[in-house]
Image (cartoon, rainbow, N blue to C red):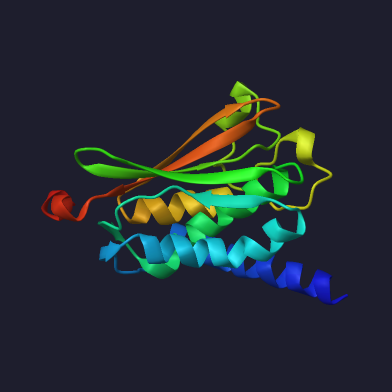
Length: 185
């Protein structure tokens, strides 16, 4: 009963956040902040679930540069994506976080060894309440990826997915570099 209560609480909390973000009721300030503490916070939130499945989380070494984000909200976006990676990865698998710098954005990629998804599903997964029919028996609500997308877009970033059915997925979050702060509108 406690587990079910926690699930209901999470769903309701996520729904409230989602609606408030959609209607611009919630506003949050983004700033030029080091990204590594935000990533660590997100990993710490899902570490217990990964450990239960014997999933190793590897964070490739990268420079702790400052990116334009809000630590609390961005950690939630990362946590939602990581939670899906754990949920859909096989036991004993690996989830890898990697980093790539570009001129205006930096990209943080989360790669799992999960079930992957078909090409036609990849355009739908960021829609509110969308769940692929193949995972209808797996716990979930179809809110996490949508909420992550909303959060990252509020920070003038974006998310992409690249997936191979049966082999895994890579979600990449693009956040603006601190040097590009004057380009925001």
